Image (cartoon, rainbow, N blue to C red; front, top):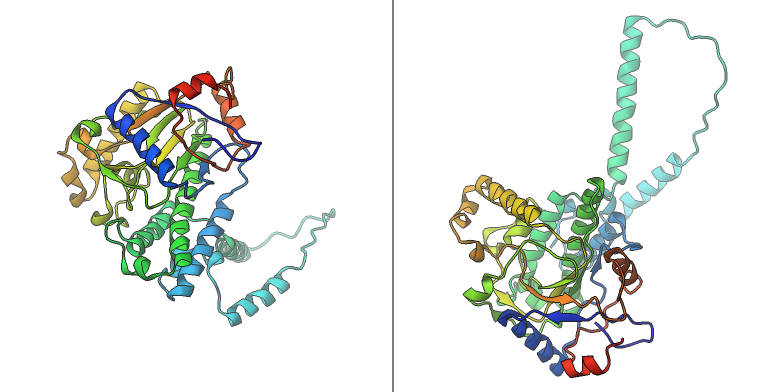
Length: 379
């Protein structure tokens, strides 16, 4: 990534000596020559000082839904959103505003010494307990109504709607094909917001277990970039073992691959037609800056996946007999971060992540001739 304004961080990656890596470099070079730039320039995930929160991303999802429903009313059911994010009719909104104003009076609690209260009868104690329980239920209901939290189950349902409305790249759904560009863009944003919120949830789970976050940068080029089939030999390069600073082919398909299905525990929402192991590649890439996974951790992840697959609904078990390479689990590595480059030389993994955190907009991903790198090793 390079070019543009003065305040720019250059990261240099060295391609692997493999045929699939050479094809990826050629794909990037093609985009470079054809003027097909990066489509979404702020797809940086889980870096320090990211101001996005689950609540703010949930609001982004609701905003996308509003655009989609404005184009075709009810195309995304409001029931899929938390009550606090659903657009209310004017009358309901006015009522809610009035209730909010009434309920907004401050509750003043004054602690003063008083004589012990008289003992209550058993019936009075039962009535008091029932009253307290009723108040507790009311408070819980109010908190639920005010919540903007979206569970993984709800996100799976929302992603299902995206799949239905988008269709595949080869055969776009009527909604997407006939929608004007701003609505198509809102649908694509809808999908990206869903995945960002899923990432925030996963990072929170990792932190709760005392694990480091897994920052990454997703580079997605102009949708017109070519996609080509992966050969059987290239499919053997799939791995679930992620390594710090590695570049992997990105998933350039509409739907979910099997590992994503497992991570989302999505057994019901994602239809069989949208379960799509990766079979194609493009210039799109994912740069991983999380902690490297050990061989033992990778083996455990595969074991957990296969346990989940065997316990999945019958229609999913058809995947069980397939060879590992056909399942396309994980990603295909194509390059590695050059940590000798002056921009990051001598920095630890944590320091590199912290430095990247200050540069949250992608400028470009370019192929630079090797001779030029030797002449100008600096940024």
